[in-house]
Image 1 (cartoon, rainbow, N blue to C red):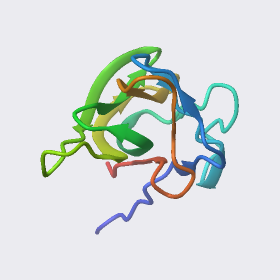
Image 2 (cartoon, rainbow, N blue to C red):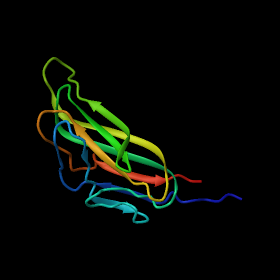
Image 3 (cartoon, one colour):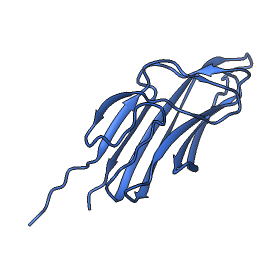
Amino acid sequence: GVTLQNNVPAFAARNSAAQALASATFTLLEFDTEIFDSDGTYTNSSTFKFTPAIAGKYFIYCSFDCDSISDEKYVLLSLYKNGSAISSGGDAMKSINFSAKTDNNQTFLTAIVDANTTDYYQMYGYQNDSGSKNTRTDYGNIFMAYKLGA
């Protein structure tokens, strides 16, 4: 017969307030509002990390949206495992005409990771515009993961 499995542990979290990101610095993203957390495996304060607690393969998704990025500047999103970067994604702002453009940039990252019971995952954001820039406070910033079936 067929055995159906739920894709848990699983969680989704977003930020409740704008977070300032210094220029040219990878900054831990503070996803402090849990949308759901099936097994209590996401920490929504201080370390903002996902510790699966059950070994297996996990699908991880994150979107990151930063306000007021200038023409030809960019944002990066980086997935950290146990304190080290393992995957990155980025987006550059390019104007579509010859005048400068300033707007928000959004980038996404997906990954499938093989986790043991104590591995932990965090998301870091980066922007290279001049000065500090804020993350958006809507659902443009979200971090989520779920366990893949056996």
